[in-house]
Length: 492
Image 1 (cartoon, rainbow, N blue to C red):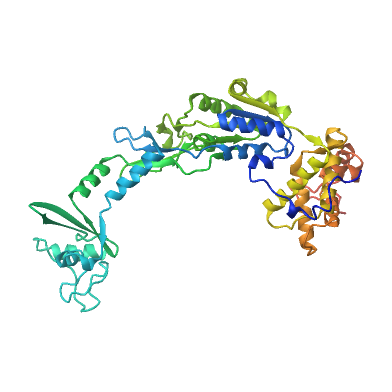
Image 2: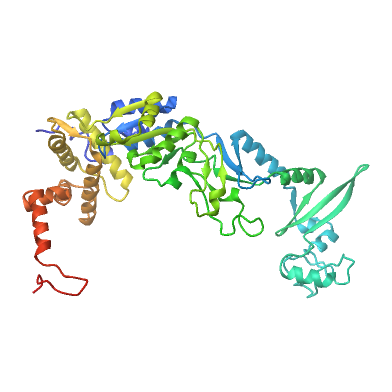
């Protein structure tokens, strides 16, 4: 059958424009793309049904492109009364920005030690009281005159000894100096603190704001606000999917161990909050599907320690937000293994889509094949573009697959993952041959190498049954017995 492609318009796949819109990069799944766009905008769930390699994961990932940026950050807050039951705190973007401003307001002012009062600079260890030379407070001896820089302000006769020992370990008592200053008729307290090579200056208002913040319970961010709205949970374990509390060998002892709130780890259902949770081959989750259903229904899911032998088993964080769009995928044969309530929840607030496996062989769709080839080459990043002659061989392979696998004439296969592998194999051959473009001969050579192993078995043995029979017979003729070192004769 002749080519529909205008060879005069395109010479190679580098001339093919790749759409900026991720959903427009999905080939041959027009209905699925339309419903996916609606689902993203209306926050509906999707169940994608079809064989591997037809674009299910690509559609799921493209959906996140249409979602707004996450607006909430999830934190776990220490509970001083009952540490094993930390609190959950949800912060919006506006609240986080105000918090940053508040934190900046307690930082005070950083000044050069030379700009501080001399007695302050001396007591903090920046200025030598003997020669006036300025150096780092970590240097206990003045590099200019060789005298000690320590200033004795304590009354104890042993304070000099303690100060020198403490300074030697970097924990000297001269890390903060408090003084007063007069502003008009008002006298206020000023605090000077060491801050590396600078001195931090804080007035009364700054210190008051700092005291208020220090009174708040400490917290840990488990779901950051700047995150990827697409979370892939295919093949996730129970802890990866639902979260966990890490083990502490000291049992969370406040002096020795790690407090419970610091050991909480969010799961995929929490990381997907405000985004898309994609689970391919969802039936492989088995009974874990019921937890997905609970998270969808409640829009929150608790985090607990999942190992009964761990110190984390006693920790529980309730009401952790998990408001996500579920995009699940499976093969036709696995539909029966999706939990009925979960499937009902998807249908009740979303769509079920049967993916296409072929599309009509016409000029428009052949151009889509060229787009697919160009996309695969760009994603790989290590192979050159392909000539139109080479692309035509890929198109012919697509026609063959549509005929042999799906029984469709005048059609192109949409099982594109395998064809993507063929493109890469041809590209590797072109690189080995030092070709600037992937040529027709490179694709033909790749076809010989990229035959599925089932086809190779059929070609070599005649049928799968013959291969199995031959393999079984050969294994019985003579096998080396590793338990006693006896050769049963096959190597004689």
